[in-house]
Length: 160
Image (cartoon, rainbow, N blue to C red; front, side, top):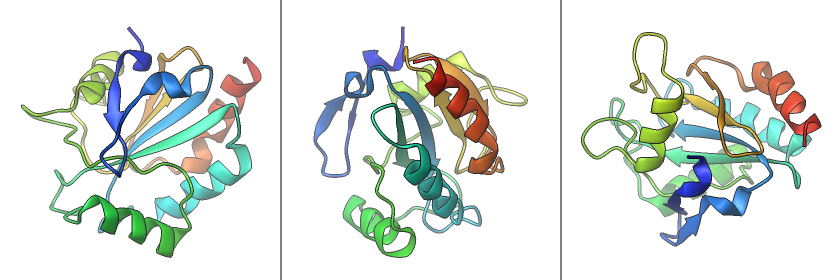
């Protein structure tokens, strides 16, 4: 199983297959607009500007499960990200990353790379780095600064 076995919805509520990202290194992040870690959007965008091309993609998945820090609608979230951080990578449909209604993609990600204590997502901005074959390479904590993932991304891109 890989991420290519899943479909997700983009912020316009259109279903897309993750095969769209086949042969790319992908960073998947659960995001929130009203979180103390929200400034990571700036670092993610810089990483995307530097490395994003035909070999690297970032997918942001808004989530409102942590202290109600992403209460907005998809269009509001996209506008916030664009206006405040110049985000040009895809912001997807708001999802659940824990609990009974966890999105199937996140069930897979958590099964493939458990966190510090268990599989649950602890907070906004947990990051999963996916290799070009669609497999989870590594999970990073919410406080991991995006630039600290850069060398892992570059190493995976160099293997393509």
